[in-house]
Image 1 (cartoon, rainbow, N blue to C red):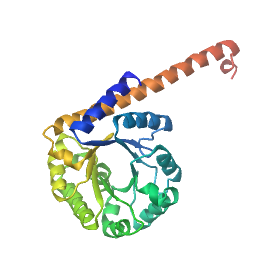
Image 2: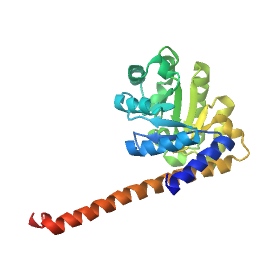
Image 3: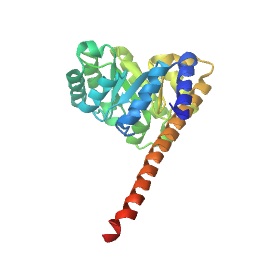
Image 4: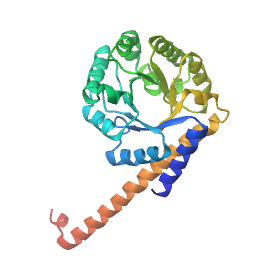
Length: 266
């Protein structure tokens, strides 16, 4: 492990002991995590004895689910599931990849992150809570806010907060996990407490997943700062890794062209 990764490991170890960190996160969807990056993150998570949450590329992303199974991911999340039909496709896909026994070691959730999904919430939760179903919902506040035209400035608004509370209450009544993500920072703490008063299983920053009980910690501000530190270290680690690869390729390109003058001949 390099210096960046060792610091990331220390943050996760401390976070697990003191701040309620349960997992780190990767995305095949918007973030476009590559397999080699996922393996580096997985090693750090395993050494810290925390889980890995993986957002797959879509409701039927079979190949992504196969990798999640191979790597022992703890949480699988499907993005942009907006209709009961899409949710049924996700459930069928996870049942195709994971046996009932294997599903006991992993939680399967879907993102509620658009107004369309919100309007279909009752029907979707009926499917999620029935057999074979899935385990819960992740409310993505950034995309949800964007879907109603509120933008990032509206994330902590009463309109968005009330929608999250409605989803929280519905998940509680359906016996499903409820997770909140999207712009989780110091500014979100008051609203996170409101969600927890109803039902909040976990909350998450871009790269770190916390237990809902972490909101009871007197050091929560420090915990969120450490989550940001973890993400920055991850980005720096990626930049250095791909920078080295780029440098090696540039050196090879220069050597080949100086010998063969292939590009000059074009």
